[in-house]
Length: 274
Image 1 (cartoon, one colour):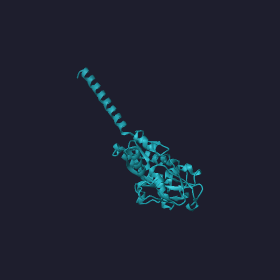
Image 2 (cartoon, rainbow, N blue to C red):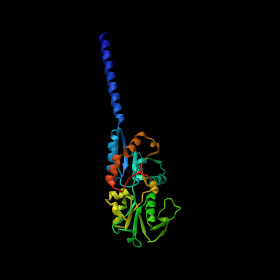
Image 3 (cartoon, rainbow, N blue to C red):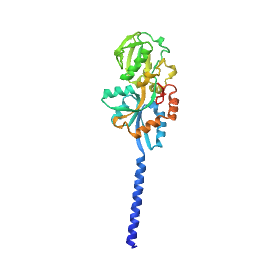
Image 4 (cartoon, helix red, strand yellow):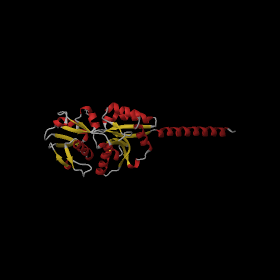
């Protein structure tokens, strides 16, 4: 073999090796996918467990925290996050209707019982005529709060309304005065009102003890609309990577962390018998 042929063969082998190396490098890079999830701050410890779970799947899960109940969906619609996990089914339905969006559920997470808290009373019979009550101002949680009060005999609502508001109160024995606030602000209002109906994660953020709630929502088949969910854009409803994140949430180690963070104030929903 001539020197030129030998040299050409060496060059060819070198380029082949370089090409394989580059391909291998690209292959390794493609194995890691970044997914951004929008959550409320109280759920951060739980999602850190999920973050660890998906690492072995080649998923780099970035946790983005929001402090109110509207930003996570806005961020999802705008593509600032890939999925979010903070809302229940009825909240999503109402949000989609109000904002003409098409966000969809891709998996269940938890149920968080709503409860009535107070710094001034310890039982319902202590509520006085004209007492001030704070409730969430979004359509689904406002309805849920009013239904909790109705169940405990304080109100009667218009039965024809799926999501009743304060305008649909038919009977108000104590002439209760309602203040509607962003759900995330209800716990902060407790010094200014006689009582407030607070979502479970908000109560946890505010260090409210669920055992000291005046009344707490019962969990049963009527709770199905209040199951919290992981949400994505409709075009991504079958995204395999996002489904892996859902699967990584619905595990025993996440269930343990939920119990550690929330005690009995949050119940895993993916295996709940309702």
